[in-house]
Length: 123
Image (cartoon, rainbow, N blue to C red; front, side):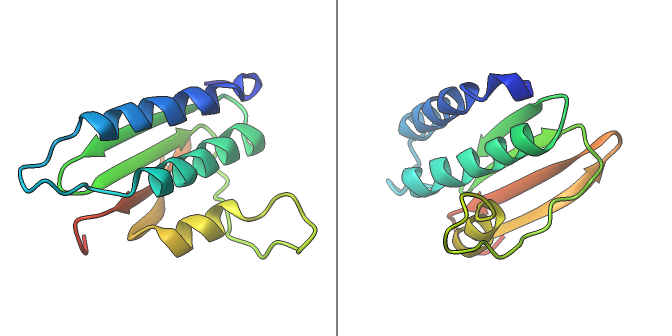
């Protein structure tokens, strides 16, 4: 996805919902609350598209946990920040930090990967 493709955020949300709906664990449980997963994924994808150039690559993997990774091509690392009550931005990483079971940022050659995991207990 490129920065101009912000409409693709909706497509990513739809595809993640489909992935989670198809996943049938042996114990009948689910790796993650689909709505939380979609919210956090939307936040990371939107951040990548708004704050970097060159687009983003989204990967979701389901085992006993859900792991979503959003890679972009900017070396600058995002920093969680406090959002003002009236502000319209600044809440994405705060939400990820509050709702994900685990999350992080790792450098990758020409960019970085921001990821989170949900479900299945501690990593």
